Structure formats: C-alpha cells, structure tokens
Amino acid sequence: MYRPAVGRTYKTEAVVLRSMRYSEADRVLHLYTAERGRVNAIAKGVRKTGSRFGARLEPLTVVALLMHEGRGELHTVSGADIVSSHAPLREDGARLAVAQIGAEAILRLQVEPEPQPRTYQGLTRFLDVLEEWQPAADPARDALGLAFQLKLLALAGYLPHLDACAGCGEEHALTGYSAAAGGAVCASCLAASGGFPLGEQSVEALQTMLVRPLGSVQVAGRASNDALRVVEETYAHHGGFRLRTLAAL
Image (cartoon, rainbow, N blue to C red; front, side):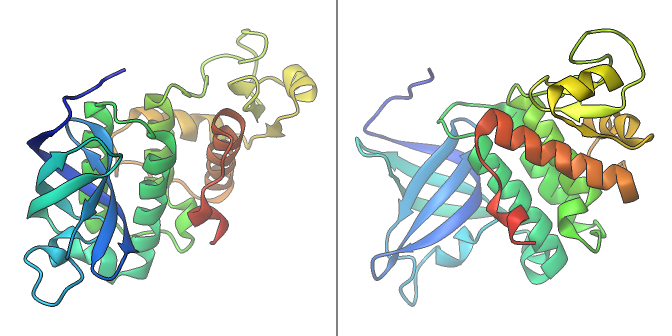
C-alpha cells in the first residue's frame, strides 16, 4: 500500500468532492488528489467572515492546495488557489445532480489514499465536459454520468465483461446482465445467474460508453435504463453499497 511520509507540508492539486461543517468555523473536506488519491482534510476557520480561502473550497472546485500531514486521519489545509471553479455546475440543478452522482461514485469506489492518476484525470475531464453538457431530464440516466460511472468501475477492477458470455465464456447472443457472473450473459446463463434481461441495443451501448471518450456518446430509452441498472447492481454486488444520490432521484 502507498504510504506517504507523515509530518510534512506538501502541495497537491485536488477536486473537492464534499464539504461538511465542523465546529463553529471549520470544514471537513473529502478530496481526490492528483498524487495521493483520496484524502480527508480539515480547513480551519474557513467559515469565518473574511476567511482567506473559504470560497475557494466549494464542492466540485479543482484547487491547488498547500497541505500539512500530521499523524491523524485529517490533513490540514493551509493554502488554496483555484485551478477551475466549475461554478456553472453549482448554478444549474441538472448539471449539479449529475456532478454529485459522479463525486459520490469516486468517494465510494476510491476509499484509500492510493495514487490513481487515470481516475484523477477522468474526474477532471468529467467536470470539464459537464460544464458544456446538456444533461438528460433524469440525471440518473444521463449519458455522461453513466459513462463516467462505467469507466470508474473499470478502473476499480469491476470491468463488466461484454465480449462473450460472462457465465459460460461462449460467444452466444448476449441477452442479459449478471453482476454475480461479472458481465453480459447468454439466455441459458441468465436463467441460472439471477441477472436481468438487456434490450437489443444495450450491450453495444455499454461497450461504446466504456471505450469512447467522455461526452462523445448519447444513450436513451431502454439502453439508458439498462446501463443504470448495470451500474447499480455492480455497486451492490461488488462494493456492497448503493449511491445515495441515485436513490434520492
């Protein structure tokens, strides 16, 4: 496991995933950093009037941070400069909902302070694309949000097997999905695996979302419903969780 040195000051770029009130003037931040992966930190005094950098630590902001790592779980933020504010995401309800789904997916899938450069790059790309994106009427079924979650699952080691039946390995027609089997399955394996049926275009849509760049794929109707269920059932089976942001929609 990656174990950085303790008791020193360091600089890092990070995305603020979540910000929570703590005591009368402080905030606890859940961060995803470029060099260290998941980091939890405390920003002292940022809720006071006249704080030097309180407004720079809003959720979804990309920031250049000066941090101090002590022996406790929480690192201390001692300086912050905005790299990308992503203010349009917080000002639009639909974009904000999609962004919050992506942020929670990172929090639930990346729980350790392990450097994951591809995950960090994917997160910042997701936020950049979302600023110009026209979200779906239902944020849970938004193509960009679904594609981002599928890519996160792949990076976390839960890549759905979509090229052949995940149950028997044969290249039969794939008619369903089984999280227990690890991907799309044929009709025979679907009956045995306890999965769910997929629409005719859904397997191709899932493959496309996994391999194409973020923002280059549109998906709707049955395919978006199936993609959402694939994501949710993979979370539940492999991670043992469901996203609160999805459940609330």
